[in-house]
Image (cartoon, rainbow, N blue to C red; front, side, top):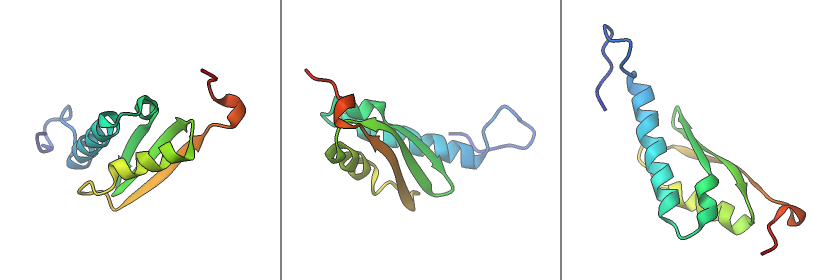
Length: 93
């Protein structure tokens, strides 16, 4: 990403560029896993905190999602706001 320049309002500032890079990296890590359900997880980075949001069918997948994004440089904490679907909400096939 290009650094921010005060005379170019169309260019993202450094914190926005950093957020975009970290969110993209987290998304790629989630999609590399063999679990298609992880594709529904959304990542949002702000001020050292990466928040995961979405809905997954099991607690195990919620934990897998968190493990996927741990260790990303620049992320001081992962806030896992992923909801686990109730048994009645899960697909039956």
